[in-house]
Image (cartoon, helix red, strand yellow):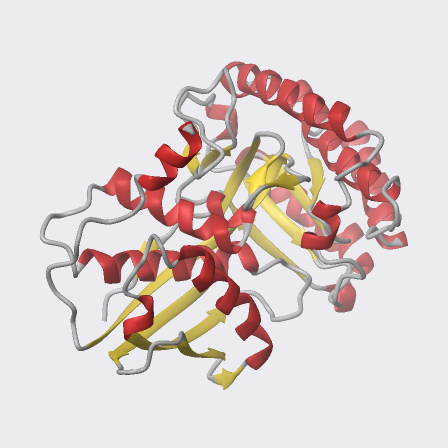
Length: 365
């Protein structure tokens, strides 16, 4: 009952104006979870709390052009880098169906959704988080123009995150930054399963302007989609313990982010990455998304950390790529190490230097 009441808060007041045509543009970044979410219930709700770094350079730019129409069905085309991308249409159709009660203007318009990524398409970097959050922000700006009163920045971001979640769970964490929490947690006031919120506590200077280099180990399609992987957590023999461990790690990383304890940060982040893949390897059917080069990179990071007394560490998404995390104070040394020792294990030697960022932003004409 309480959940229904909360969700109903995102149903807008009656619109006072319907623009005939127009366009809006937003850019939104990808994110990388430090404490992972793997497993969901209901309509895109997380089984455990997660916390992520919002990235800066790996982002999606989306332009939404709209014009009023007479027909009653959803009407849209999708372009990627200026070319029609019909394989994206089923996901957008499902998204529109899920959010229609919260954006009741959708059937009144024909949309042209133009999207492009700052990272190479099929690079193995998930674009669903950045893409869905950018689209959600475009739709929120459009809705703002139809309302008589201004939406506050907090309400705008929360509803954008709420909508983005209905397209891709992790997209809920891409609207704000540099640290975002998604999922209810007793130790984080204001946290919610319905949307992501900016991490509300002070963060030690050790974590400011943190760096993330994404090593592109494998650029092909994953053998198992994230949606299918999440569904395999239903009935998983270790699921309940995993959800508890993740929520416990939220409490632990909260202490670490306050104290600046780098050794505990590394322990939690790397353990979380390996637990994520352990759940994949122990589901039925079981699957392995890491590649031999993923493991070689991890071993070399561990050796470098020991030999150089570094505070470099790694995390993984649901794929073979490795995110190398390190403080700005080690940027020059770590990036030299990546170029000399890790690049050879990347597909075509490709990697992307990134850092934490501040979330989505509107693009002016």
